Image (tube, rainbow, N blue to C red; front, side, top):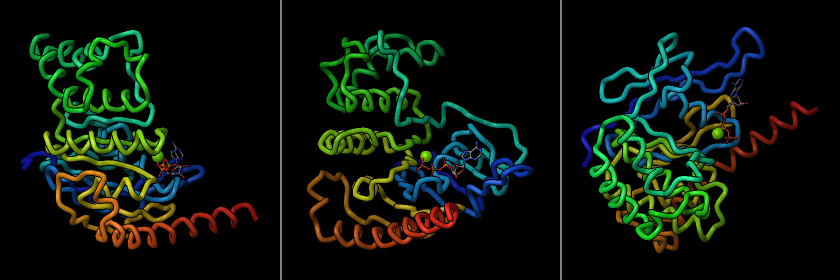
Length: 274
Ligand SMILES: Nc1ncnc2c1ncn2[C@@H]1O[C@H](COP(=O)(O)OP(=O)(O)OP(=O)(O)O)[C@@H](O)[C@H]1O
Ligand SMILES: [Mg+2]
């Protein structure tokens, strides 16, 4: 089990443009993620999921509360932003160099930063690519890959830096259902192998349950924690778990909470339009 990457989000708050439009994006959000745990955040559009991820990544500051990783203060109001290779982010639309090979895309970071020799980096890249079914694609140009292959390369590239935590913001949103289910299994394969702490955002409830140790449901804006549900299904998991009674129970429990928030978001939208 991992010993690093424990994350404590304590009373996090974020107000955008406090002197102007004053958007309260996060309000008193507290979440604890143990070292090596897979935490999934779900919630209606605009509830502050990306805002929270940006604060953990060190891209944007909180206006209230704090974020601590392994006793190191990462974020608190007024503090200098602290992004770093200990927190790697994978977005929905990644940025691979399309005219470079898969192997180059994955290995170039640690080589350029003198953290690995080319031999070490290539060896590690090959090992990780093999684990996500891309052993044969190393010499392909990344511009030639399918969406599902690109996502896998981006996740492998992030893991090359040996981060303490992997942050993923709806990485599989644009994929078709079949591709998604395959890529999710590969992500779990990498997770079981590396046991990094994972902070994963999605709108897809089945994806959340399939991947997570804990699912955090957020309320409609301002984002608060509505409910945290422990997913007590054993690992390693394959897609067969999605038809088990336990999976369906969790889906119904979480589905009710999410539906309630979706309705609130809809009603709030209606009021704003009235
Ligand atoms: N730079 C900004 N200035 C003002 N408001 C912002 C800014 N960035 C985000 N917001 C607002 O803060 C709220 C939370 O945004 P955020 O992007 O975190 O939501 P989200 O949960 O990630 O949504 P989605 O599911 O659509 O990605 C939204 O109402 C958004 O409009
Ligand atoms: Mg978002």
